[in-house]
Image (tube, rainbow, N blue to C red; front, side, top):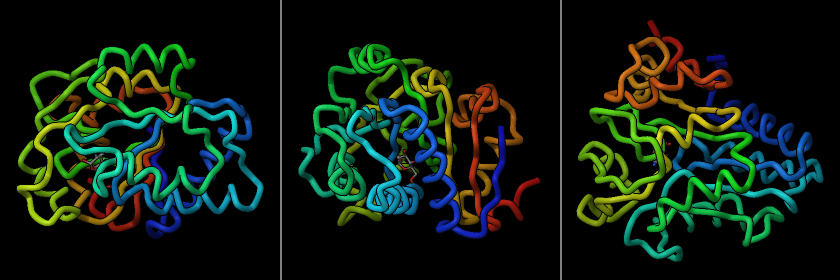
Length: 235
Ligand code: GLP
């Protein structure tokens, strides 16, 4: 794992967007794996700036998002489709037919990714309990895209976006750990000391499905970008 320590979330966003810009410049029909959550917001803002500055072009780019809540329509303000539209897709020239989200046809998501040539660059955040996408701590690493019951800790963390925890969907569809591990390169972003424990377990802990992100130690091209608050807590 490459560890890049940045001053703050703004610098994380600039660095991550630079990695995306180089990917898109190197391969105009790149397949990008995208994530939602607060950790990726500064990256998307910088990617939009790069597009507006004429540095990047998304005309031939295909995207596959990591996950989506079950039971929310794409127009629901808390759906991940809505998040992506608001923060990235409506601001760049990506074709709507090249945007993919996992849905109930879980089995086909992995084959659609394969058919597209595989994910060149995957963006990830990390949950407080070490989850990636919606792969929650469990007994084994789930392989393919699948439906999951969200853990109480994830429901409570994500309830900040809803009126109450009761409104947070209890299930989601997510890329599996195998799906994520097949990406050719991965960038994971985390900032703020409340993520320090999860990052520490991911980077220094034992590889175990009780910290799903720990599997990334076995991937040969992962860059973890953290801020100094997390770095100071690593041991
Ligand atoms: C959700 C998403 C994850 C994301 C995580 C962390 O559970 N499914 O993909 O990494 O939240 O979100 P945040 O960046 O807001 O802390």
